[in-house]
Structures are given as C-alpha cells and as structure tokens.
Image 1 (cartoon, one colour):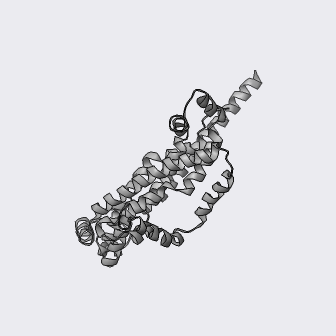
Image 2: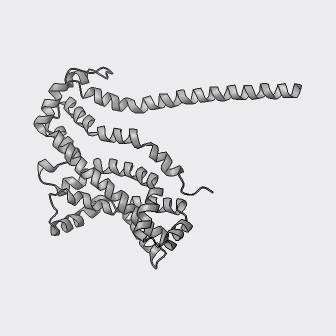
Image 3: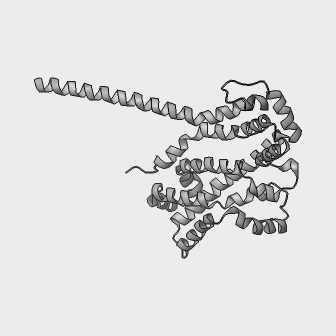
Length: 288
C-alpha cells in the first residue's frame, strides 16, 4: 500500500515537472517568435513614417507619412503592375517546378535504366553552377527562341529545377513502396496514371514544402529578370524596388513601404503553408 502511494506521489511530481517544462518551453518559443517578427514589424511601421521620423530612431507606433511615401513610390514605379508581374512569374514557375520536378524525380527513383545514376549526378552538378555563369548562354538561347523581354523567358527554366528533383527523389525513395506501383501496373494502369493518381498524392507534402521555398526564390529573383527584361511595365517587384532606392535615396520611408508591400505574399505563404515543411519531412506513404 505504501509503495503504491509512493508511486502515485512520484508520478504526480513528474507530471508537475513536465507541465512546468512545457510552460517554460512555450514562453521560450513565444519570445523567439517575437524576436523573429520584430524586424518585419519595424519595417512595416517605418513604411508609415517620414524620413525625418525614421532618423529620430526606432518606434513601434505607426507614423504619419504613409500617403507621402506611397505617392513618391508611385511616382517612381507602378508597384501594383510590378506586383502582378511577380505573381505571373512566381506562381507558374512554382507550379512547373513542383510538377515537372516530381515527374523527373519519379523517373530517377523508380525506373532503373542504364545511365540513371550518371544522369542524376549530372542534374545535381547543375546546382553547383552559379546562375550568373549560365546567364550569358541562356540569354543567347532565349534570343534565338525570341523570348527576350517576355515573362516566359523567366518562367520556362523552372521546369528544370535540380533542387526540387533532388529532394523529391529522396522523398519518393523513402515513402513510395514499389509493391504499390506493381499492383497498379498489374491492374493495367499507365505510368502517367500511376504518377498522377497514386504517386503525386502521396508525395504532395514534399511537393508543397519545396513549392514554398521555390515560390520565395522566384518571387525574390532579381538577376535573371534584370538581364532578360527591357520593358519597365514587365519588371517584377525586386527590380522596381531597386529603382525606388536609386530614385529616392533620401526618402527612406518609400523604400520601406515598397519592401513591405513586396513581402506580403511571402508572409502569407509561410503563415498558411509552413506546416508542410514539417509534414513534408515526417509524412510517410506506408507505415511499417
């Protein structure tokens, strides 16, 4: 009887300590989240302040210069046109990278043909080549295809995204069982049917995870549009923000406002889809 009472008290003590640890963990995570979000909050607040107010120091309260900053920003560029251009570039590029990257990864993972390993390593080798080095050759290719000064010149290369192929191949290796595919082939399913109706739904968390990262990369892409686009009405936000910085060097508020508007889609995408970063690693197709 005494032993049972002792065990109960010990369990209650352990549970109490566990709850205390959880409380401290939540407090730590809240503090960490606040520290991470403070720079973004200050940036947005500075977009509402005049240059004079910004030079006075950091403030957590909105200023009175939002209208002035917006007018001067619009005098330099049509930010909403740039916003639309960035969407027209980032969204199709993300979709192409996700689907065709998954299709390529499926081929490398489940089709054992001669040269499979060599071709896969060649794809990975392209990740080691900086974008700037391949830009001259791609500019010449785009010129021959009459793609210069078109958004397609920036969108189409997303079909061949080596980083997405690498990650999704590893994901398919770990989560898609060969017996599942063999059963579908025995039932007479074509390879495209198997990929679209069986494999792709299984690897959706992994595709979503890479799509978040790809969307951010394509949204922030600066060097490629700068080299391939000549018409100002086709410029995405990164280029237009650089124009604001060059035109209104003394108007810091306009620069903050432009940057604040440009990161809204990135913040929204992370708020609603960041859970896929965790589920993309932890999810499995078949539980043992």
